[in-house]
Length: 292
Figure 1 (cartoon, helix red, strand yellow):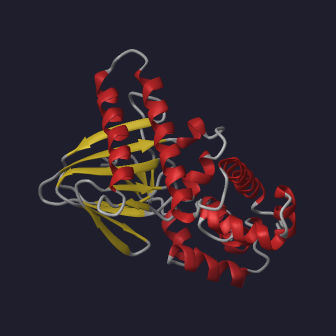
Figure 2: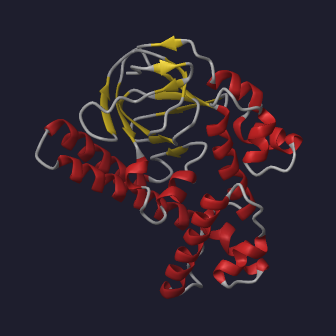
């Protein structure tokens, strides 16, 4: 399934459709540590499947769905017998849609949709993915438009589920609820665009018109993490891209990513990625080519 692997960087070959690659995978093959710019979605049809991320092994079964965000180092472990859908999608194709980048970001370090915990969401995503697979292999006219629209519906369901899981709506009117969602998606997009700058809670609160206290409380309620942790994760994602470049030092990466000291960068990076920036860089710039 991995065709071009340069060190740990996989180049996904979109042979049939721009930005979309679908595998009905039955291979009994383990795939080494790698990353790619595509979002990866794995949905077992028969037998469990195992992914390793940040030295943590996650096994999921039929009915479950597992999502790996772009840029995430991971390994794949296959059972002796099994069958699963593996979808690779270049989300940059629809990145101009408001809220999409935030939804992708909230998948970090991975998203495990467990059927027994959220059966309604799991069934909904399963339906989208099965139709995506059917359309992909049907070769019908305009199936690319249908597939892109199904991915958009899938992301919308993930976004709604995330907000529902982190919010109590009983005391919020529908009008206020919609406004809050728009406000905090706008704030998230602002952080996405300015994460390397010196962002303060005062600046973010002013974007919504809330007090600092009210802003901080509502942001965590709707997004599921504090605004500062959201900012840090965006900086780490930015740093990861820089660390794949061979001619830039760790100190330069730290400063360019918005961290004011190397020690802070090293500590935060290891907390998020479970390896030091140096370890991550040594993996990413390994130029030993592999092809599978």
